[in-house]
Amino acid sequence: MEHLLSKRQIDIALANNKAPGDKAVWIEKVIPTLAKQLMDDPVRYRTYGIFWWEIKRLLNQRDYFFGDNQEGHISDLYPEPYLYLAAGMFSALARIEVGNFENRYRYQEENGVQFDCVLEDRDMELRIASHEVEYFMLGC
Image 1 (cartoon, helix red, strand yellow):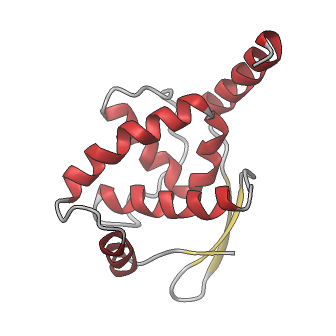
Image 2 (image 1 turned 90 degrees about the vertical axis):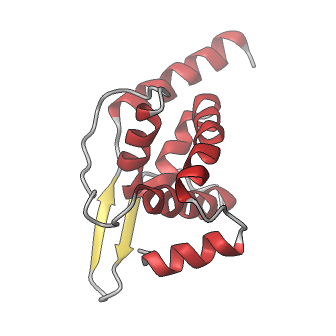
């Protein structure tokens, strides 16, 4: 189970990791690296959980086009875009560390309420399939 982080918890974690105080600068610094990682290994999108849809929107706004499919809507969870990006990155780091690329999540809110989520982005799943075909066809 994953706990949804509060704005305060995210801000503390970012400060501990020496992120710039100007979060717009931080977003612009992080997005190109994140986009490259997703282009190289599209299955990584699954590690961002419910935050993926807002992250995808941020990527697309900066001309890193990962498809126009937008199925999820959680834009009322946090007041600022950097919070979605940071929460998704913390989720991804924890999942990648243990090799968890599953698309099923169970979250717990601060008030103890739990909910399940299945993340499936058709655009990204097609990228994953294409990436796998390319890998097997080229042998690399």
